[in-house]
Image (cartoon, rainbow, N blue to C red; front, side, top):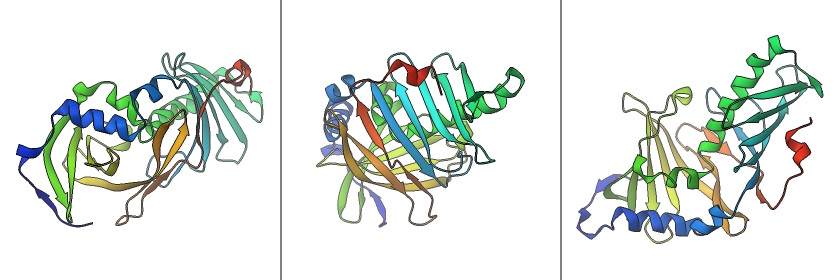
Length: 235
C-alpha cells in the first residue's frame, strides 16, 4: 500500500475545487441530477451485512424502493418500502407477511439499504459538503492524493468516520478508509471497476481491502430512464 506521508498544504486546492474535481471524476454534477431511478445489486463479506447477493430498485425522488433477495431458508424475499418514511411491506414467496412478522424483516432490509448504498452513491454524500473536511494532502508511494474526511457515522457498521484519498488528476476515489470510534482503521478499501452506469454518471463498483480480504461489490448498477410503478407495488 505504501507509506502515507503528509505534505505541505501550500500547493493544495480549496475545498470547492477538490469537490468539483470529485464531481468531474463521476461525470459531473448534472449527471447525478438527471438520474432518478437506479437498479443495483450488492454482495459483500462485511460483518452485519445481509448474506448473499441482493438487488434494489430505487426511485430517488419519491424514496420508493424494491428489495429482492432470499430468506435464511432460501425462500424468495421481496420487500417494498420507502426510504424516506421507512414504511413498507414484505412478501415471502410472493405471499404477504402478516403484521406480527413484518418488523423482523422490514427493519433489517431498510437498514441494509442505507448501509449497502453508502459506498456506491458518493454523489449523495457530496450533496451536503458541510459533513466533509479537507485535510492535508498525502503521498502514497510516489503519488499525491487529496484527503477528504467524512464525518458520517454508520453505527450499524461500527464506522465512526471515513477518509477518501482522491486522485489529483482524475478526481476518482483511490482509497476509502473506514474508521471506528476508537480511531482504528476497520477497512482500507481500494476502489476499482469504475463504470458509466448511465447518463454519463461514473461510479466505483468494487471496494476491496487486500490486507483483511473484506470486499464490497456491485455486480449490477444501472441508472434507469423509467421504472414501471408496479415494481414498487407488487412482488
